[in-house]
Length: 412
Ligand SMILES: [Zn+2]
Image 1: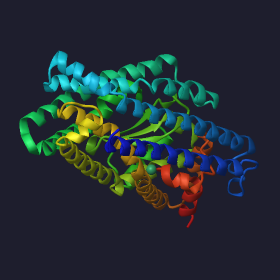
Image 2: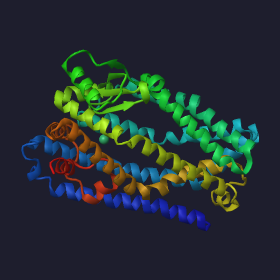
Image 3: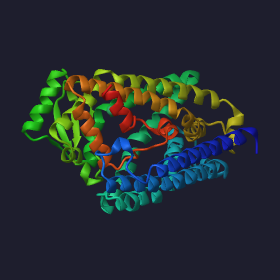
């Protein structure tokens, strides 16, 4: 084994070890508070719900540990068994190395790599979520979702791959800038198409019916000068009892979307506060900032691929006897998760800052913090969220602050 392979193996094992350590830390922390409802939550959750949330947290942690170990194992097998060079050679031998063929190689490997995770996804939905009363997905919907996903990937992802590989052929050394531009244009197109074409393939969207709730939310939109074409209700209950709210599209295509599950769980003032929080994300320009950040990261990514694709050692470390760009793209994608893992605490810290800002905005436009606090309490209760995560664990993984942290910030 050469040193590149050794470093990659060490990184994969290090990630797995840290995941395991954090998970154990969190499990012990949850168990230490499991006997009775902690002081901070008395009167917010009752004893049976609290016990259930502890059981749900522990069950998810156990399952998560299995998933992580399995993921690390699959990655090591895929990277070092020689299967990737074998498949590449097969494509090269039978179909040549045109952009169409190498894109087909990438697509095939991508599809094949989604298969080992299927049984775990199935178990998570139909055993784990089912056991705690969250699953409402039928087998038919679940399988249909997977099929639709593959068809969409073939219709949208495959042409994008061909285009990027063609750009490499056409533009020479500076291909990475052009490829980045193409990816950016594709992502912007998706931003427009997703709410109109893609999301309706998976869910039904209906306008929020006339009534006091609709009036109230429209008034809030007016008060915060938030332009929205419509307020839509999404049938989230088709798949799960978990609840959510978001908005999609931009400019005059913007749509506010509320899950039907959210509407049934919250009061009107709580729903208004949740929407105010979402508008806060918009007003504080969180979305364009995230988009700029992700665009810059993909620019760095493409540049790194262009550098790695010139290094013979990079190919040899994983058994490739070629310097075709396609394997470099593939290897980089497979390895990026192993590297990005170490940056996730930073990304989540950033995301939590945005959540605090959106909460503060909601408090300001609502003129009181109680509606949002009420909504957050109910959401934590209904989703059986872990109320007592270990600070290291939530610091590393949580994109949102915990209930205690958010309430403290709102009542300051
Ligand atoms: Zn938020």
